[in-house]
Length: 240
View: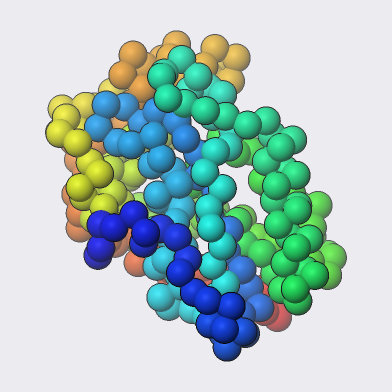
């Protein structure tokens, strides 16, 4: 797997897209937020784009460039984090969907790499039962299946941020982006009852919530393979 960051951007020409005749487009949505001292601020974007690339290698789909800044307000205490409002993200996705519709593509899948983008569920919900179908991927069940297939040991609730899952994906797909320190970076904070009110810094000094020490490239590879398999169901529903 290449480590070039150009891998994250679609490189097809307009002729390529005409010949592809894709009926489903994928929009990766990430964030620009702290991921502890060893993962880049762009981690969620990198994860979303990597998922898109893996899906595109298995299915004929249209690939869109990523939305790289989203709703990361709970991470604002750490330098480098940048956010946009939920209403702005909502508008971006709707505008992209409208543009695709005018070009003849009526199916849009939002490949979400950041759990804090709650508004994306509302965008997809509003598009249900219309002639412009949307889906949000991966869903909770897709992540659960991928983590089980890969042998991820930390529960999804405990492995909330920069933990075993995200670190494994980057170790497999973009290992040069992972800095030393993940091996001793474990920090659990299962009681985050007031996260949205207080921000993540109320629960972790490092910004990590999870066990990155358990991460491995092989786990990352299996996670991605499972997600590609899960995506097949979404494609069947959208193309029906």
